Image 1: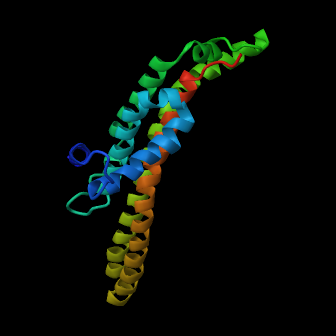
Image 2 (image 1 turned 90 degrees about the horizontal axis):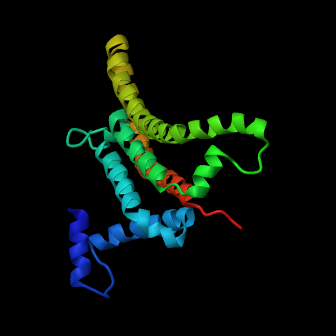
Length: 216
C-alpha cells in the first residue's frame, strides 16, 4: 500500500519534487540502489536485481519495526527461522541461477591452482555455496531475537525481584529495567535498519560475485 501510494504520487507529479510519503521512501530506495546494488553488482547489471533487493530490504525493515510494537505488533517475524530460511533460500537460488561461466569455473576448477590443492579447495568452495545462505539466515534470526530476549529478561526481572525481596526492591528494579528497556528500544530501532541493510548488502555481494566477469 505504501509503495502503491508513492507510485501514484510520482505518476501524478511527474518531474516535480517528491513530497509526503515519497520523501520518506525515496532516500532509502536511492540508498539501496546507489550504495548497495551498483557498487556490489555493477551499474550495468544492478537494475536486474534491484527489485528483489528493495523487496527484501523493506520486508525485513518493516518486519523488524512491527516486532517492536507491543500488543499491536509484536510479530517477531525475522526472528523466526522459517521466515529467514525462505529469504536465504531465495538468495541462494538467485545466486545459483545467475552464476556465469567464470563463477562456476572458479568454484569447480579454479585456475592457476596446483592439482593436489584443487582436491582440497574445490570441496571447500562447494560447501561455501551452501554456507553463505545459512549464515544469512542465522545472522538475521540471532540478531533480531537477541534484542527481544534482553527486553523480556529485564521485564521478568521486575516481577521476580519484587516477589522475592518486597516492593522497594521491585520498584527500584522496575525503574532501572524500564530505563534500560527504553534504551534497548532505541538500539533496536537502529538494529532494525542495520540488519535489513546487512542482509541486502550480503545478498548484493553474492549476486555480484556470481555475475562478475573474468578480467583478461
